Length: 270
Image 1 (tube, one colour):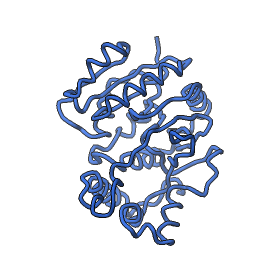
Image 2 (cartoon, rainbow, N blue to C red; image 1 turned 180 degrees about the vertical axis):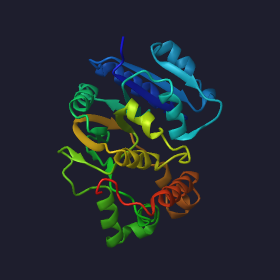
Image 3 (cartoon, one colour; image 1 turned 60 degrees about the horizontal axis):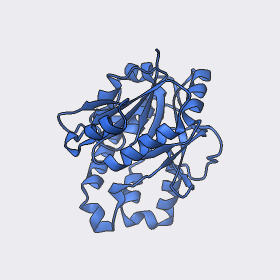
């Protein structure tokens, strides 16, 4: 039987949330053919035993080391059988009908390479999940007290598209990697995730290469999911952030992103 969607989840330290996400997917009971692939960056956590007991239909791939988010995803994509790939986080609850909506939308819009759902916080409020091309000010403003200044706040709001109508479908530069619905053949054509990004900005990079390939990136509010999002890189005060491993990984990833694209125009506006 052909498979519509391969749902790929990379696990590192989220065993409890992963169980919740898989239970939510089961409750949503998507009326499409799909497979779930768990790629494990941390086999010592015991996820494989949990999957065998509670979710025996999932496919499991243990990795010999932590390859990061993009690297883990690539190893899941390598074995995926679906015509579509859902790049998915282990802390999201799928609402009924959302996967079906994304399949139907992509089937009806061949010019679209990636779409992403409306993400909601646990309290039901909107979670901003689509972005413009980042500038060097963005990571600084989001990591330091500079972000409290009005000019910097306006720049961050613009980057995160906070003043756009998130009730409507729209073209965007990039979508958060927590839930990216894309074509398997397109992913393989553009070379999957760039593994130079261990964590952070791999989603911006992937979406940018989708635009460069001539396909669109679309925010699709008809599909909705709840995301238990936690920005580990922004936890605590200034000292905590400056000494946080996650914050420095994010800064390093932005530098790699900036060096890669600093002389290139925004492909969405070309």
